[in-house]
Amino acid sequence: MTLSHEQEYQNSWQERQDYAENMQPIIGRLYRNAGIEIAVYGRPLVNTSTIDVIKAHKTVARFEERKLRLRESFPFLEAISKMDLAPARIDLGKLAYGYIYKNAGEGRSIEEYLNAELSELLNKDAEQKPRDVVLYGFGRIGRLLARLLIERGGSHADLRLRAIVVRGGRDGDLEKRASLLRRDSIHGPFNGSITVDHEKSAIKANGNYIQIIYSNSPDEVDYTKYGIENALIVDNTGIWKDEDGLGLHLKSTGAAKVLLTAPAKGDIKNVVYGVNNQDIKNEDKIVSAASCTTNAITPVLKAINDKFGIKNGHVETVHSYTNDQNLIDNYHKAERRGRSAALNMVITSTGAAKAVAKALPELAGKLTGNAIRVPTPNVSMAIINLNLENATDRDELNEFLRDTSLYSELRDQIDYTASTEIVSTDLVGSRYAGVVDSQATIVDGDRVVLYVWYDNEFGYSCQVVRVMRDMAEVSFPSLPR
Image (cartoon, rainbow, N blue to C red):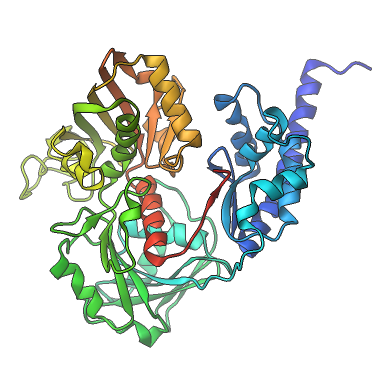
């Protein structure tokens, strides 16, 4: 009997679901037991749903001439699960597509092909002592960092969240902190289980035991009392931004290094991961992860400058409102920020354009910038107007940015979309520093306008975690290169 079109589609969908469901436990075991994070064309598959696995495979057709079926990638995942590999991020989609459709296998078996492609992960000592991490402050960025670190927890975790330091300590404080981690109005519910240990003042989340420490000053905590040694302190408060203030953390017993999740003042290195993280040295005790906007625009600017050269330009940030604005009209020490954030577009300043030069010195003095705060709670956009050294056209520029997002050293920082319907809420949860909206690109010879979306909370937090790994000197290669 001939199957109807509807029945064929239903059978095809069922097959995809079956493969995705079979993939999930393998992906989970690889991550928990071997520290292997599986992705498909940059889309991580760890802790995702069956539908997410299917959708990740569907995105391949946006970048390649053909689609990648789950039944095609599944044998590669099975083969990887049988290999003895050091912790890494492995792009299953690129490996499978290259072998099947780009003749990368060159007549070899899947196993032989993977042995060659993943050779640098073979026969390596996978034992890597995790670095203790302390979050100092537990606001928007602190809670998202906690989610990311908990997500990466397990026997092969390279960074281990040991404690969170906050002010307060009044009755009910611990439960409220746990509740804010458990529920988020923008990023949704926590993916897992959270319980509170009132007796020991701790939060237990997905197997992670996190000590809550109450302190009013960075220099008065003895972390060794909690078994924490050589800790990386991540300051999310934004209170201290110079070497004197942030240096207070290093006076606490058990603290070794400090990372600021905001732009720093003075001679502290402002690091945008993917651009100048190689500047982080072992002797650096205090480092800044710069701002969300600087992280969003600098990788794109570096790529453009390396390819076409930038004479000068202007960056206008359309930024979601933040916690330092007023919900309703009230006194604020800054100009305009006293007006209701939920009702107004508010012109304000941004140092992001100038801050680019700290990570990318060749652009010093070439950029100006300003910002407009708008009534949305998350996801922002940078509108980048550039005058280039070398003229181009829209198709060439977009193709270059698409390839940069897939194959360059900036592939974890720059994402690319060709959607004509995408809006800001679609980017909530993006793990990239910035997402190039190719459909909005404008090119007129040597004049270019780029529109770059960014989740100013979650995408930035992912960049912070990458800087944390470098500061902690833990390696986590991404393959294929």
